[in-house]
Image (cartoon, rainbow, N blue to C red; front, side, top):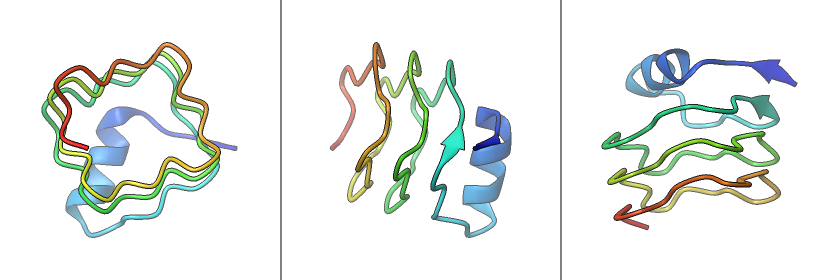
Length: 75
């Protein structure tokens, strides 16, 4: 698994990357971030915050989202 920080993921997303399969990115803070159409298949995102994030059409298939916060997220 490739390890990424939330800053790296957000930067890549803004550059047009939408696929983040098999990444290791626990403890990330995506609060208020627009991740529309992203794919996090089989990603390790446990303990991350998606508070008020836009997660329309995001694919979390097989992702580890243990203890992640999706409060007020647009799903």
